[in-house]
Image (cartoon, rainbow, N blue to C red; front, side):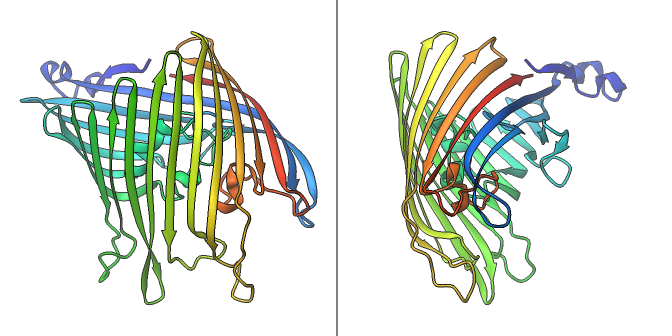
Length: 360
């Protein structure tokens, strides 16, 4: 699907022999949807209002990128990836500029594994991605923040990956870069994914050190999940536990998040996905020093998604979700980065969306 180009050959900067061993691939995702939401919080008085909007990245975040490999001999390759997010609805970038999703370079060998250096996803994010019921942490509608946290992309990362038969091993360390405090702002994690025929299993952990007066606080997450394949169906289940001593206002500091789902191929062109999510919230920081710590009710969510594959690269999708005791995707407990809300006088909210995704 990617457009393959000989690296630098068009500029005449390398020899013809080297060009035959080096490639660059241009790739991307264009994903946009229109959404209807109930019981959103109105600006000001937080009363219940409905909302209709167009947004980018319903199934997969819209993006474009470049990736490439160069043969070095003896089975070794040099590889890189540069990837930038796009808000397809207004044409802006998703970050502050540059390649906000991925920017790394590394060495790799089929036997010895891969070492990558740069801006990368956390190990927990990588390992758990295919175990999310929607397959890729879909905004419509999956509380992915409870699985991977808000620091799922990290700077200054050294990551190692190795594949041994059906088993993939991964670990990473993010250098904090704080003078005189090696661990402050640092992060690290490890995990594995066993991809069997009818049964797959994975587990991972992630730790982020957050600076605070007098030092830093840990935010640790542990996750495990499994997939069982039966004929045209895949049954999925997983759990994430998070615990932290951070003092950031309103942050959930102790929770266990459960999910279960099914993916079913109705026909070779039509897929149905159903999922249930539940979060046991044990502790949450107060919004300010003058307010006692809240005791929120445990939120729940049901998600349905239909995917119609017009081709290998084009998907038309319909999604619906209902969250109880929380905003959709539990966004009010996960830093509100998806811009869902819940009116103060309502116990739940619903959403429905129709979208189109094109891979290139």
